[in-house]
Image 1: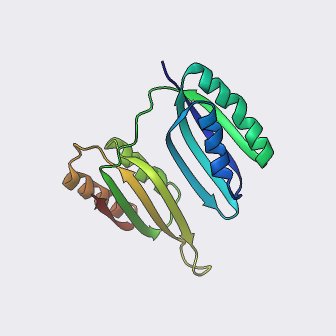
Image 2: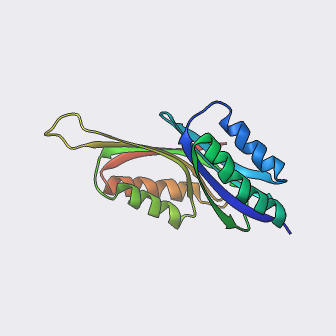
Length: 175
């Protein structure tokens, strides 16, 4: 029976770091089922889920901290089970903007959860043009939608939500 482990790694972005980390996972006898990585300024973030036999997972749990210490990185790991690949077939880009208010993102993400829509990526920017003006918010998301979603109803209710929040936006499907 295969076991699974989520690994998150943070630190300064360095040449060959990703190669070193994937080599550690491979040498331990595990496969990388999925990963996400990003560079934020000078820093690097990597989250991956690996799978392997019990003994291979233990080898990764012992080897990753050593590799991270050598590369001056932070690592965190958690065992998990029943990972399923993200549905990449029904993605959409969501954008909205308008007057910023506390709780806007919470309202939008709660709305998505009622339709079983998951957020894969999020970028949020608040802009204050003048001291006497309200701050403006601009948000871009990538979402994954269930195959059986009623897109017309979803988009209609999304626009109603945005109107209530004094925002405007759009959903663009990526086929």
